[in-house]
Amino acid sequence: MASLTGSTSPTAQKGRTTSEDDHHVSPSDIAVGVIIGRTSEFFDFFVFAIASVIVFPARIFPFLDPLTGTLWSFVLVALAFVARPLGTVLFTMLDRRHGRVTKLTVALFLLGTSTVAMGLVPSYETAGWWAIAMLALLRIGQGLALGGTWDGLAPLLAITASKDSRGFYAMVPQLGAVVGLAVAAVLFAYLVMTLSAADFLDWGWRYPFFVAFAINVVALFARLRIVDTPEFKELFETNELTPTSLRATLSQDGRTVLLGVFVPLASFAMFHMVTVFPLSWIFLYTDEAPGTFLLIEAAGAAVGVLAMLFSGWLSDRIGREKILVWGAWAIGAFALTAPLLLNGGETGVVIYMMVGFIVLGFNFAQSSGTIASLFDRRNRYTASAMVSALSWMFGAGFAPLAALLLSTWFGLFAAGLYLLSGAVCTLISLALARQIALQPKGQD
Image: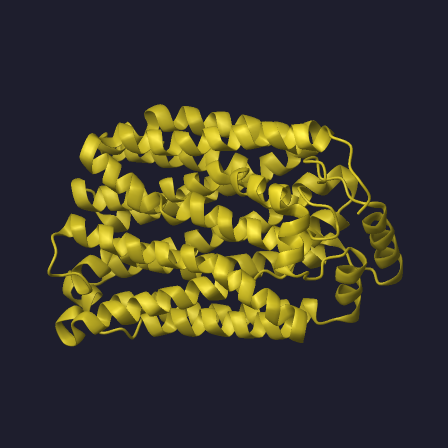
């Protein structure tokens, strides 16, 4: 297992020197493709997540009370995260047989068509249970597709960056997630605040799903333009960022894969605790307008970007491991008290969101680079993809559902305890990862 500080193998170092000298591929070139790809993926996911709170309980589950309808909508949210690891397995097989370009094309086409088709799903009054079945099937399609959008650019970015800027470039992929969230939140806020409630629920909510398809097309061509070049193909091969079989990966690095799932757990859980969960609480239990909250959420995302930039800069000076440990402790502290602010009126909500995004950005910034750095070059590509898929499933997939259930049954403090459990898991896994990293390693 590689060190958490992000050290690379001699082969990777050699590959970086050769590529930079001969082909002039810079980390900035890779960063462009990473940000575009992540933005499109997270825009698709957050369009669905926002709709699961302010649209689907009324259109897809009108026969249930608002709380129960929202909970069942969150079950649909979780479906994609459950399907994502399976998508990783299927698309890794496609990658090994037909190449990265084919895999990305199929995955992004599936992601885009699944998302735009969601905007065409009829209401329960029109189609009955078929409406629920169609939405569930399309949500699974989103999850399978996201499992196939892993292109290796994120670990490649961390590997090719110079040693004194590796933490900053490891942060870059995570920017796309926050940007995708902000764009989705602003678009829904505009529609909610300019349309009547009847028009929004009738047809206005569909537009973000249609916009997602256009964004995916742009992302597809932007990423193919990068990965389908001789320079990048050589970089992937030189740095051993090519798919290996799942059986070989698990037999050689299964323990590290299992451990790696829990390293970014706190930040992935935190992501939904400052996005989807508070939106559901505000919508169900307060008089705050959803459009206003979505604008607050977008402003929080902007603050989160600043925190991520600072985290990337700081990690190059004190090390990634300290950032992760400090970030997990900060998430734990936030979990103990901050959720109570959601009942504190608009001022409390603003404080919750701004502090939450600062804490999230600080920790989330390094989660992508951490996953890649856990593995040696032999299985880095496939193992990183599997760890990412499983971490999102356990960390974020069930977070809105669990947090809303716990807070409804026991109060907002219980939702904080749920988040605290994620922080504890991250701290324990980091301690174990440190011990494994110190053990003597055999030959690759």
